[in-house]
Amino acid sequence: MPASTDFLKSILYFSGLGAREMERVRKEAVELSFEGGEILFLEGETCRGLYLVYSGRIRIFKSSPEGREQVLMIAKRGDSFNDVPVFDGGPNPASSSALEPSVVYLIPKEALLALVGDCPAALAILKVFSARLRHLTSVVEDLSFRSVVSRMARLLLDLSVVKEGTAPVPRLTQDEMAARVGSVRDVIGRALKTLEAAGAIRLEGHRIYVVDSEKLKKMA
Amino acid sequence: MNTEVPKIDPEKCTGCGDCVGECPTGAVELVEGKALIARPDDCSYCTDCESICLFEAIQCPYEIILAEENRTS
Image (cartoon, rainbow over all chains, first blue to last red; front, side, top):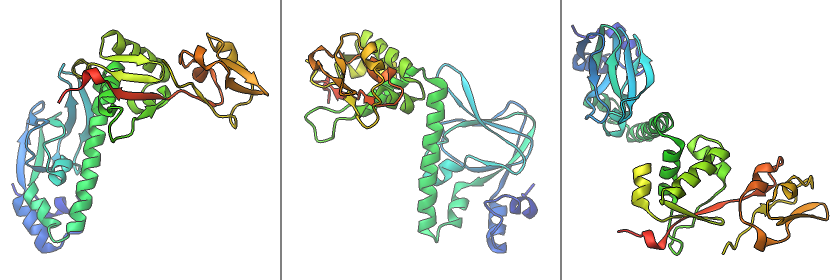
């Protein structure tokens, strides 16, 4: 069944559209039905477009390699989801499944991008916001699934530079490291000792040397 | 050899002396009412002084360096 104009007008994205553009979106919308528990799409897959919930509830979540899940959002009637990859061009940043029998409308990304096609500035702004949202999604994933040792390993990998290089050597206190990985300084101290005991880093006075970045990557 | 010692901000230091009592090597002293790393060679950069200071007057930053022996392409 084609999406109704009234329903589409209730969605914030489309509330200001003119009649012609609204009709174009309405024609492009694809109605999809899912049973409870059914997967709509998986994290990492190519984005098909924006989803709008017409009825039911959809769970948007991230999964760890070990199978743990972190729910990011429960989308209900009138909510949209999977907006980020439409505008930043990347893969789906999360997975989704129906919590109960649900009907959604898929608006193909080409149809959405056409709405801002004549305003490059608007598209550029949307790309920036989408990239920020994607980054925040990965921060949530990091905090939910990774241990402090793992997050510290990632931080040291990201920050470490060669001493004689052009980039300035980063200098962080343990409190600053704790703030970056979402922990407290005492735990950071223990994490550094763990990484040193594993042979990935060496602590010498005020210097943290990354001595085995391959090992550090495995621990990240 | 450790060439750096904790940074003490004299504006924030109240001279409470907690860091002096906490320092395991006696490297920190109160001089004219302010904390000072009086014996830098004795400092092991354990960061206990930074941890104990209630006024955030002491900072122990770490440099994060990709070691010579680790360099890969």
